[in-house]
Image 1 (cartoon, rainbow, N blue to C red):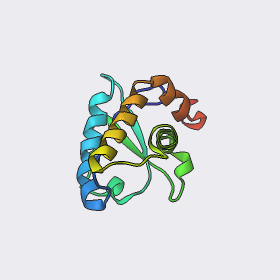
Image 2: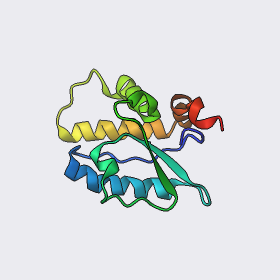
Image 3: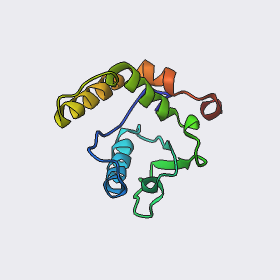
Image 4: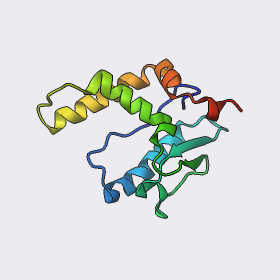
Length: 130
């Protein structure tokens, strides 16, 4: 939530359609549990197969807002990924798979511990001025 600087995420080993169909449901549940009582989350997503599958179980307190095709610049989370890559994940040599996962988890936890970063990077006037 760029307005409150809150985040919910998962570090996962694969990014293929089969793995992501299951992971997206896990992610939606994680987001749903992070939403304040009585509030509602709008999750901005692209049209990747795992975002549009009929197998998706969208919780009642979450609504998906689909971006037009080929428009990552409209998705604020893309800027968060870029920030994490540039500051904590790039220009490294990883020892092995576990080292990659460890660094990804560390980068995510650093970001979550800095809600002001999420707010400054993630806010979009077109989405929050109303």
